[in-house]
Length: 289
Ligand SMILES: [Zn+2]
Image 1 (cartoon, helix red, strand yellow):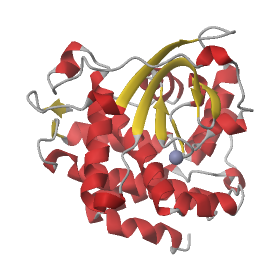
Image 2 (cartoon, helix red, strand yellow; image 1 turned 120 degrees about the vertical axis):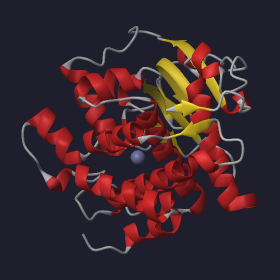
Image 3 (cartoon, rainbow, N blue to C red; image 1 turned 180 degrees about the horizontal axis):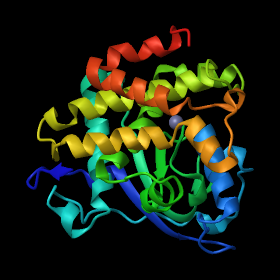
Image 4 (tube, helix red, strand yellow; image 1 turned 45 degrees about the horizontal axis):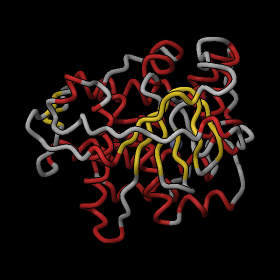
């Protein structure tokens, strides 16, 4: 992914929390148990901390450090963590441009080990997630290498990360529109046509709309998405499909347990948003699968 060297960044939208390793040290995500937790997180996506029991210890409540080293697009080369400021700034800029005063900017928390959130305590083994209680996206900077590439066999890359972060900001939009609460009130459901799956596919659609527009935002720090970038985005959507994960981790496919949709569906709705814009994304809820 190509960055605009001169574009100004707003590092205040991202914080970095490390040292949240209370108790067990850094969570191993390479093993079998790590993989199981990963699957749960990818399946339940939003708010896995609650699902994992939450609570936790005070040791994870360390204050975050700021990201003030990230001032321009050129800083991504100097400190690779700055790329998360780019993803976050552009997601907020895109949605703010669409929703105007109805939009409340979300924040991103980069964390290592464990993190205390408005939804309880989470470890990085759960993968990226959105917490509606505090309006923040939580992601481990090593997620792409540890999970997407090593565990799921994805190509990885910055564009793939922008898709994942864009998906989580899609949940932020659903939080603001009330769609998230509506689906959660319907109870945890699974299966290809469940409200839960549609919620996830809509977040993919929103991510697609964001990616299609990200380079044309005023003074965007992202200069260009080339064909290789787009291939990496589609590849990431493929490896987070329920059928792909089930086959890879369990050897078989059971659609009744799907909560995020198949690889094909995720790629489809990502492309819908990318090609047709944000307005098609509501159709996820009226389409009979
Ligand atoms: Zn999700």
